[in-house]
Amino acid sequence: MRIAILAIPGVQMLDVAGPMDVFSEATTLLKGRSGYTVKIVALSMEPVTALNGTRFLPDMSIEETLEGFDTLVIAGSPGVRKYEDHRELVEWIIQESRHVRRLASICTGAFLLGKAGLLNGRRATTHWNSTSRLAEMFPKVRLEPNTIFVKDGPIYTSAGVTASMDLALALVEEDFGRSIALRVAKELILFLQRPGGQSQFSVHLEAQVAEIGPIRDITQWIVDNIANDLSVETLAARLAMSSRNFARTFKRETHMTPGDYVEAARVEAARRMLEESDTPLKRVASMCGFADQSGLRRAFMRRINVTPIEYRQRFRPAETVAAA
Image (cartoon, rainbow, N blue to C red; front, side, top):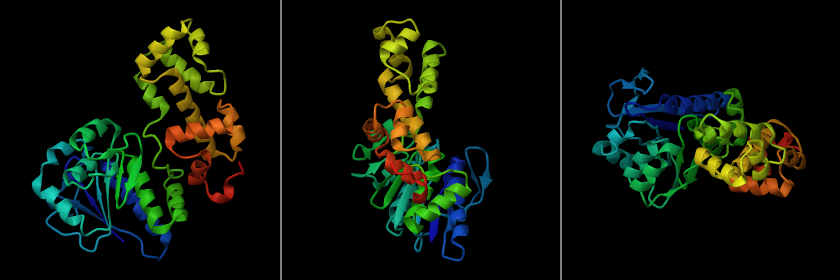
């Protein structure tokens, strides 16, 4: 199966190397079965300099056709704006989209798919820091701003950097089944594949905008005491603040309400338990501060669009999943 990865100057190196390693490992594990052949495509045959300074030689240029290729992956770059109006590049993407079975973009590579008109009317995502610009430039795109990757028909789009490997694992699973994808993930120490609907960044990262001080301290206390009473009244009392002032200050510094943060932190704690243990769901719910298993399920559906059972099945081989 032939895969082409388009790399423009200033490309994020992991957007290229990450998927290549996933496809290479899958080919190794297939042991004689037809696997992947990956080629890097660039604007010309000159060396490409990545964002981190790495220089590499492409296998092909956009003067060549992708007839006979199965998949085109467009890697992202912080400097993608320079190439969004590159007429030859955009026309090449449009033309080659007719030759391949599926297309995928990583990070800001979505902007090149957008310029080619290939995202119109489709669900799509990109790096969280570029979602507003994508929505503004391409209003016909049905943006899903916080997901890791999205599949809509023959087109995949993904968030940035490490999400490139989640996307590649999804393609491997589509091609060769879940068992091979799981083995690849384990070999590469990715643990197991994250569902596409999972949030792009954790509750801890979201809260990093909080200034050093009591609000930052209380967010860590929440994480360390996830099964306790974490009502606004309780949290405010710990900081000797009124409930109203605490809620207002917390939202100003973290851009989340206390309730949103607590639920997100509890879901994240539950995710780790589901990934790393066979603890029954009822016990997971209790240990992570949910009133019952139904509360855990509702929170998972709100936050990551899958049930706890589906999440555990995604991360752990079926034979190891304990009965709920």
